[in-house]
Image (cartoon, rainbow, N blue to C red; front, top):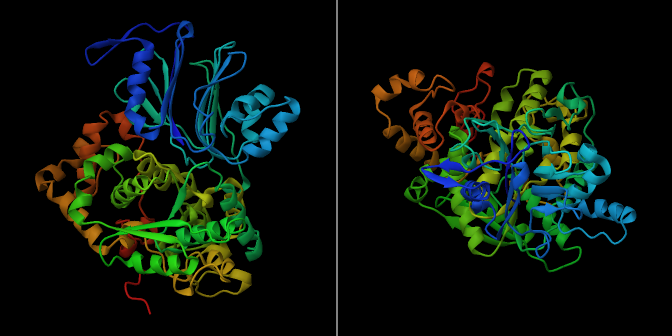
Length: 558
């Protein structure tokens, strides 16, 4: 995983010297400087390709994970006409490479993303129907002066586009590269592609599935569910560096760690996965994580943090996240401390459990869903907004410290299978009708039931959902809310709707984060890239996104 950056001239002609903060910059200097704002994403190398006569600059900040020796970008085709910067992992690249080698004898990929360049030669924009993985990329064709931009179906990898006053197109992995120079910025929609000359780009969705519009009717097959997730984890294990796994003690991260351990022991019987947890002293997650670590015999490490230590980083986390969403900020501070520690151990890739709550209906507020149709519609909405919350947090926090985070639950094939399961089987609470037997069941029941034999201790497998910001220690949410609120006076908060007419903060905590964001990313355009994560108020849920705020939460469990 890396950082990508590009500037494409509005007319396909050279771009002259630009003035930024009082200094003149050539196109190369400007691109290198602005990409430097996300250089934390690629601490291992920086690559630059300039096509000066066509006004094109492409920069790649690399974190070496796959193809360590040969995979530095930008990639340039053998004839010099195609240039590619790509961020992510193409999980089926070995199969694709074998197919390419049959057409071009002796072909060997320089890294997983190199196949994108070769597939473009064969299929053009239809290459998107052949690749599977998490990705965001920009490809430039010198002959036609055409650009191809694309992002993975669920927005696991971030991507933004902007337009400067001259109409030039800017592309970056992080918003901070664009805001100083672009008056217009926007989030690139997951599952979208754009192709053509700048100013005349054709836009379309390269990922479209029936479950996005229709109510599914497929009964859940626990055996198929289990093998599908195991296959997803298997594809996510390929890398050329040391890796580990986050282990919160919740069922999602615990299952990923357990499955990964089983797979690795197929060839290394004594393999011990490195697992990591973070929390305040005596955090609810720690005991559950210890049970899992013992059960799968992982090499486990706990990082205990102090509240003040995490609170010190509020401004830093807003800068790295590029959001003012309350839920995302709360969750991210402990994770930032953990990611920094993980990087210090020499690990560059970690597995995590993001995505399960969105596709299975794991959040506690889903107990309030009034019927199957609204439950499924809410799942679709949550999946479509993953790039604004969980994926955004997971990617940007990990990459802030140069660590790649992979999310097997969001494997495209696995998501398609789970989202095609009928809502009767997935809905939590009394409406659940798995195997046509209606009775009250725990959230993510089918996921737990699929792995009931030999994967996790029952105390963890059937543990109720704890949102990460709660599980690291209940005092954490109370403390960050109190400190953030103390920075805002009643008089300031009374003017919230005038100061922030869009996404008006509804609490002093939200107001404080919004003020920080405005200082770091000024302008209405940047503010509109953020969507707040809140439970369904029309279902009778409280606005506070904490899992503890939901009525179904049990503080004390037998």
